[in-house]
Image 1 (tube, rainbow, N blue to C red):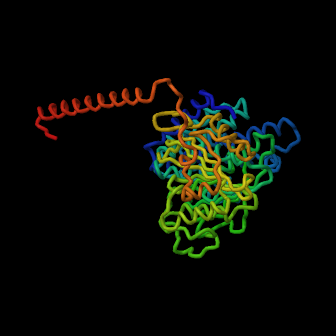
Image 2: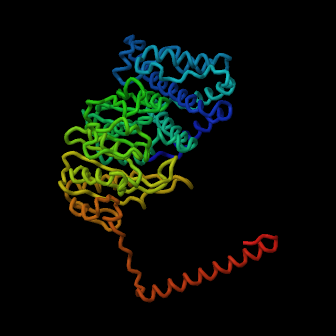
Image 3: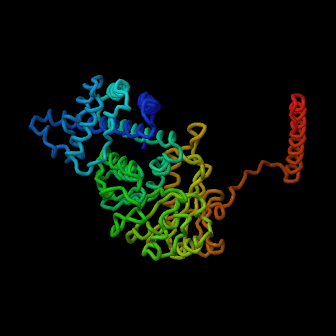
Length: 502
């Protein structure tokens, strides 16, 4: 998949900046719903208009037949909800009501969206002149001359805005957005196939499903070839996921309502071929006291203070024969011995389920800076009794002062490394990857930290004898300490001169 061009990034940023016209005019809690709702309406209208024009050109009179749209995975938009209706009313006092009515019309025609779409545009708290200005910007900044490009652009804009919400809202925002670098890496390694079931028990805005569909399409398979199942506890995030699935033309079963996965599993009998997930890091409390002896805890009772091993076992329970899991966890899960977690990890390893572990660099997430690890758990591993460890902490590049991203080449390197392991052709590379037996993991007390196994990459020999290098470096360090003390004395003198003492 090609990297985004500077022009496209500029467009996305332009839409976001334009949307920020609303910032300060409405309560922060409502801002996300307003913007996502407008992107939703603009997106489905763009796809609808393209199909409408194509049907009109065919001249068979099917341009008002909903089936002519759904057969092409295009959302049929009622007339009162089409962007033309909304843009025409942009500077009328009732623009808020027009948008709310558009949302109601869509819900009336689509049962899966009932009570999902935001209908807060007529609120007296929302300045209607400002709302009209934002509608104008959404109208005028989307070039419809190339429909396919416009659809792609709108999809990327949607993702970009979700990422911006995650950054703006801090830790709270991270609950619904997993950086695309991580999602693409999971998908590239798992390689979901047609006619499979994909599941995410904490699906956020549905990014795992979007990338799975994209992967299948990119490898010359038909769109909509997977069955998608998900669950989300947060009501606003669940609604956002439902909208995202509609925007993408993905027919997903996210349950009839938002619900907690542990205490109210909405897919109790489902067994997935692929599970992709980014569960909340070190989540607690998670209702452990209500789930004592639950059938999902095959490898041990997870502790009340941390849900990491509850998530892992929930996913294993929902895995089909020969199924695969790719999930994101905080690094503590690799080595913790707290409250029986070490014993659970030992049992899972001895069951030969851990296929691979990848240590990721920091600063990939918008909401947290802690390092994370990708776990790959597989039933029916091709390399029996072996696990691949990969240290990717030095990979990626900084896109700004706070955020790191992977290139397509980085993601492909990780996918190729994993494939080589599965094919039995991977050679250990100091500091990057190692193939390790279960017996060797047991000797390390069943700790899964990649650094223990891949070691430190070999340094190039610069020709300087070791003794000479040590003398030089020791001398340089001594000189640095001396300068440090001199600076410390100077600071004390300056502070003393103005009446402060340390």
